[in-house]
Length: 476
Image 1 (tube, rainbow, N blue to C red):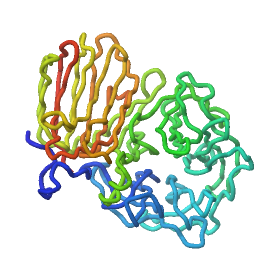
Image 2 (cartoon, helix red, strand yellow):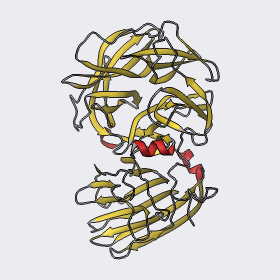
Image 3 (cartoon, helix red, strand yellow):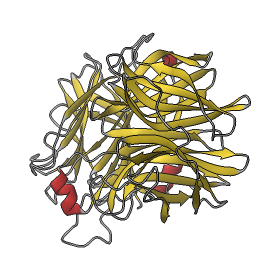
Image 4 (cartoon, rainbow, N blue to C red):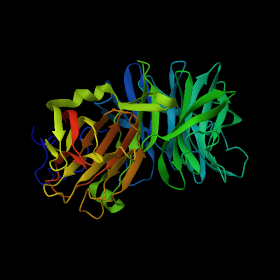
C-alpha cells in the first residue's frame, strides 16, 4: 500500500514531520481545551483555547472553526479575545455554548489578575460575532469558603424552568468538586452547593485530584455522567463518573479514567442526531524548546461518540464520519502469528488500523508502530491476558532526547474466548488507540528517523490468531 500520508510534503520534512494531517489543529501556535462545542443550524462549531501570539501557553483567546461533517474544518476568525480593562483582560478561559431561545450564549471564565469568574457573550446567528455582557462577570465571586482551591470552567444545562451551571473547583483537604448554580435567564445566578465532591460513594475508586477542571455533566439513558479533568497543581487525566442525579446532587457509582494517555479537558455536546459527541485536547509530550522550534503545540482528538457501556460505565468510539477519510485498503483474514515471526503490515505515518486477535495461550500480544527497520525506534502497544493489562510504551519512540516518553497501563479484562479488538489511528505524532471501546489512550510519538514507518503485529510465548486485520491510508 506504500507509505500513507507522504504525498505533497517537502522532501526535507518527509516522514520526520510531526504535524498531524487529519486531526484538527490551528494553522500555527498554541491550542488547548475544546470549548463551546455545539451544532448550530446543521453546522458543527468547535471553539478552543488559543494563543495567537506563539506556540506556548499565554494570552488565551477562543479560536473557532466550523464543519458540516466533523472531519473537514474551516478556520474562522477568533471568537473571543481579552478586552483591556474588562474582567477578561488577562484571558478568556474555558466554557460552553448553549441555545437560549434561539440565541447562542457563551459562558466562559474571564481572567483578570488572580480573579477567574464566569462571563457571558452573545453570538450572532452565524456564530461569527460575539457581544460580551455589559455586567460581566455574572457571578462576582466564588462562594465564601476559604477552603476552595479553584473556580473556573463551566457546564450548563436547562432543567425544568431554570438553567443550571456546574463550575470546576476543589476543596482543600477534600478533593475536587463541581459547584452548582441556578438561574432563570443565564444572567442572575444563585449558589446551591456542591453538585459532587471528591471520591465519596464510588465503587471503583480512582484518584480524581485536588481539583476538577472542565466539568461536563449530561444524561445518558436513565443515568447521569460527570466528566472532569483531574488536577493536582498540574493536569493529570480525564475521569468519568456515572450514577444517580437527584435533589440537585450527583451520586457517583462508577468512577474510571476516560483516557489513560495525553487527552485532557474533554467536552461533549448532543448533536442533532441525538448523539453525545466529545472532543479532547491532545497535549504535547515533547519539550517546550521543541514546541517553540516547531511553531505549534497541541491537537484536537478525533470526534468520539459516547454511549452507555456495561456495568454502568461509558463506551467511546470514533464518530463514523471519520471513515470518510479512508482511502485504499489492506486486509487479511485468519492469519496465525508465531512468536518467532511478527506479521509485517504496510508501513506509514498516517493511517487507521483495525485488528481482531485471539490471544490463545500467548503471554502477550501487541502492535509495534512507527518502527525503524532495526527497531532503534518503535512505539509498543501490548496486551497481557494473564494480568489483564493494556500497555502503551513510548519510551523508545524517538532517539531525540527532547521527545519524552512514558509507559502507561490500563486494566482491560476480556471474557472467556473474547478476542482482543484494537483500533489505532496514527497521524504522524498523534496516535489514538481504542480497545474494545472500553479502554482509550491518546498519546504522542515523535520519531527522529525518516524510516521509522514500520508496523507489526507480534506474539510472545505462544502463537496467536489474527482473525482479521485491516489498514487504510487516511486523507488529510
